Image (cartoon, rainbow, N blue to C red; front, side, top):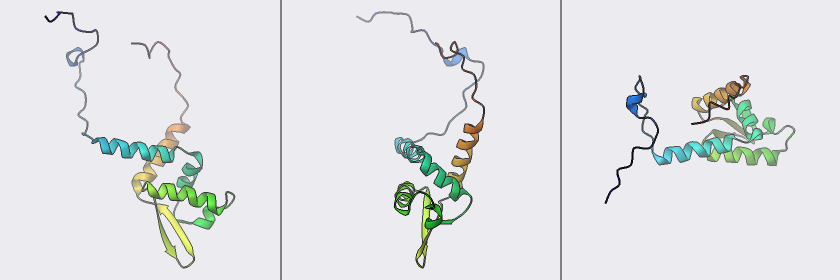
Length: 128
């Protein structure tokens, strides 16, 4: 026998004056890929490398000044594996650049957002 309990408290679409904007449907694979991109960008050293590359193509030896070639090469390998950077060889030199404008936009937006003054937190706002 089914019990006739009242509906759980909460809101329904009828409770709102406006309709929620329609968002594009994303596959589970797209969410996994985006999370992987954010994970690799989430390291300060790798983010600094990406920021340098946002200014233009750079030789790996230029990027390695201060950190060591092996360390920077490892960071670049991870960034390349996620498709954030590409490389090209010219003689003995390897040059890196951002893979496309989306990566530059992600970096610019993240740093712009980080530079904003943090909003004050209202503890009452987070409560249901």
